[in-house]
Length: 281
Image (cartoon, rainbow, N blue to C red):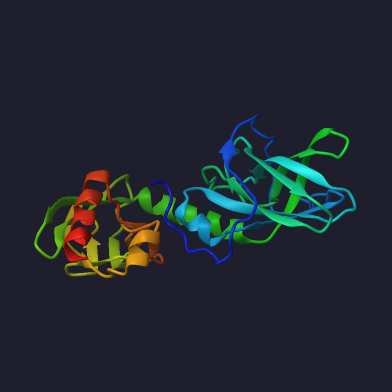
C-alpha cells in the first residue's frame, strides 16, 4: 500500500460515482505559494475536503462543488490541479447542480511531489451548460485538507526511504496468531529508526514485544515477536468494518516526530487473521 490510512472528518459523500478516464488536465507544476490567487469562475465555488470515507481508499479526497450562480450545470469530470501532486486523468462522474446546491465529488490525487508547494490548488471541472455546451474550467479550491494530505504523504515517503516494515512467520494458535515484525534499513540514511507504538485494528488487538523497537545506527535489520488477539466480536462491527486488519505503527527516523505507518498484511496473512476471528467469535 503506497499510502498510510488517514483519519478523516465524519461527513458523508453525496451524489457521486468514481471512475477514471479522459485526458490528463493541464498542470500547475512550477508555481509556488507566492503565485497570485487563481481567478474565480463565475457561478461556481469549490473546496477540497477529506471525508471519513476517504480514510479507507488510497489516494482519494472529495471536491465540494457549489452552484453559486443562477444557471444550472452538470459536472462530468473532476481532477485535482496542484504543484504538490502528480496530475491524474479526471475522475468521471455525473453530478447535476441547481443554484445553491452543493455536492461532494469523489476525486483521486496523484503521487506527492514533496519538493513542491501544494498551492495554488484548483480543480479542473468538465461542465455541460444548459444549452449543451461542454466546457473545461479551472476552479480555485478553498480549504487546507490537501495541505495535510501532502504533509502526511511526504512524511511517509521520507520514512520509507530509510526503512521498511514487514510482517513474517504468522502462525495460528488456539486463541491468537503470532509472528514477527521486521524492520529493515534501506537507502543510505544511517539514523536510528524506531517503532514507538503499535495500535489495534477495529477487531483485533496487536502486541509487539519489547517496544520501542529500534533499528540502531549501522544495524541493517531488527525483529520483534508480535501477537494478535480478538478485540471485538460484535456482529455489527465485524460486518461493517472496512479495515479489519489495519494496525497503525508509529515509526520515527532519528529525532523526527513519529509517522503513522500501517503494518503490511498480505492476503495469506489475512486468511489466518479471519480464522482467528472465526475461532474466537
